[in-house]
Length: 461
Image (cartoon, rainbow, N blue to C red):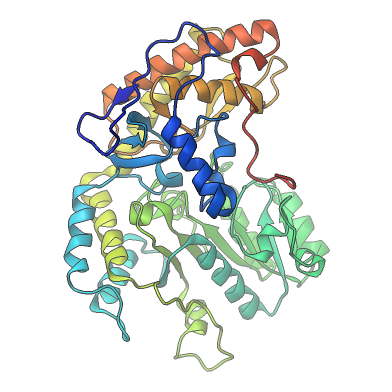
């Protein structure tokens, strides 16, 4: 693991040497103390459950000091190659020069006014030029607000109460219509939960059966157009036809696929136009901005040029914060001018090939499995019976952290270098050697040094 030689806030840097025992504890004293402070004041110890310390091996949840490019430093002075940066939001790397320059220009001009800023005009024009399948756009600060606005708009346009979500996609919103379907449904009325139904990804027959069962009740189908698997040939186009036939609004959640699949998202890559779509994450490269986009006749229901009942679409104090919109414009320009999507794919392909080769060489190629589109790679950790295992994930994450790789996923940023990927593959090979030992013992416990990592969605803490 590298140590920051430039950052001097921490006076006692921790440098990790090669371990003699796999179970040796890695010292993160400052991070451990900071995690205790976080839990004392912040429920869950983080502002996103997926960033919680329960997602990492016990006492090995680094608290970050700063980031630059594809690297982050924790407050103990350790440097990591980082993947899945900001839950996929930082796709250009931390403190990207073009984005930071655009943000700084706006900071001196004020960030929020009593009337729209000219930046809002420019940001909308830039977005609609990048996503030409959309006719109107409205910005917000987070993905949940955008997806909930899309659902509300679909209900208003159709007069129907039910929402059909794709059961194979893990997250759509923090709002009741979705969270009520998860194991963390405490506080949400049963009557609300009953209005959300689910359909399987890729199964048109099952989806049509659902729509027939709830004939004229389903307002919308909402799904991620693609995630860890490519859509079956023709699936999205036929889903589009199915929605039209049943009078449903088709909503693409492009929080992940936006920019990573193409500059215009999955709809731009696959050529299927949804009625509404939502964007976020990579759109701001870490700055808080999301977008709801879609057909003019639908979007205008939330505007001032519509004769029907008004829809309270999106109305956020900070939705048009100027420096975040400037960041979004800079991100979109950078993607288009520098071919970022193609670079993400090339980096991901190099990483996936290296990890697969390393796992195979250590005899665990069927247990450490890389999945997904090259620009959005995840990994599965399977036990001796080839079942998903939180214990083996814990073992794997421990070894990655020991080698200076912070990787809850293998989602790449364009700031990664070939050297970063080569280093990652070397660390993965070392992790897989330990993984093989645990498989041979049919028990990873001796290599965990604490409780296993836990699923995000679970009923009890």
